[in-house]
Amino acid sequence: MDLVELGGFLKSRRDRIRPSDVGLPTGPRRRVPGLRRDEVAQLAGASVDYYIELERGRAQPSEQMLAAIARALRLTRDERDHLYHLAGRPVPAAGSAVAHVHPGMLDLLDRLVGTPARVITDLHVVLVQNSLAQALLGAVPPGTGPQAGFVYRWFTDPESRALYPAEDHSRHSENFVADLRAAVARRGPKDLESAAMVAELLRRSAEFAELWGRHDVAVRRMDAKRIVHPVLGVVEVNCLNLLAEDGSQRLLWFSPVAGTDAAEKLELLSVLGVQDWASSGAGAE
Image (cartoon, rainbow, N blue to C red; front, side, top):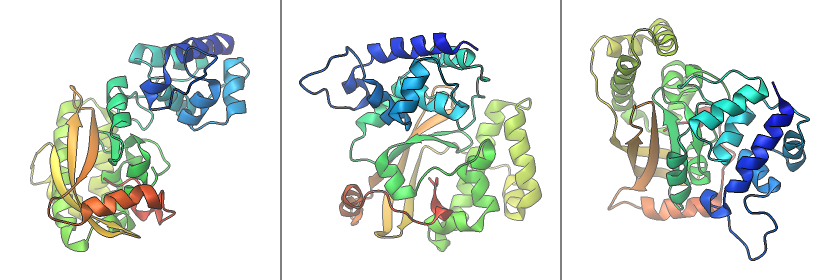
């Protein structure tokens, strides 16, 4: 652990990022070549005073804060790993909730202005989402590991299904299991994270066990969904997927289904903002 070196490294990465690179206005007068400290703090969800202490080498950030800062500064995987080493924290596993998100995928997420979008792992753990996705689907729930993923909650927490109409539940269950089987096979038999998740779901959910026994497999690339929003009612959207090269992550974005009132309802999301609605649907896809 070298917190002084950590502070210097953060400043060097901050200096190289332009505000336009991360979706911030440039403004007419700037005294620094890159981002200001308050802008990094805003992007990472930290207080300005706390981030200043980090750059001064006076604080040891948590794994969650390191992940947020790495994303805010668009660090490469090597830079992200270096950040964790300097902070004396273990580098997170590829499928965890604090996994590295490729800067290019984050750039695409920033450019989807006016479109709900998020990045998830192959185990359906949300890594990052924009404000419209949060307004449509809810905040990312707390937790670590596969248990933080929506597929796990779908089969273990009945309230998580409130986001979709009851008549759609069977179809979603089938799609989730078929997609999960593809992810588990891609990870291989030595992957403890996915193996533990499947074992737990087999133990806790008879529905999952029955579907898993079918051996159906299908990577989900596009799906039509009806989302039950607490204010807007049912919103019909197309859920489109852009997969990373290794399949470990995907960018999801939600577009209105033609011939429905979804376009008008999605436009209202920016006006309504983030709703303080039940966490039962939070983090859904």
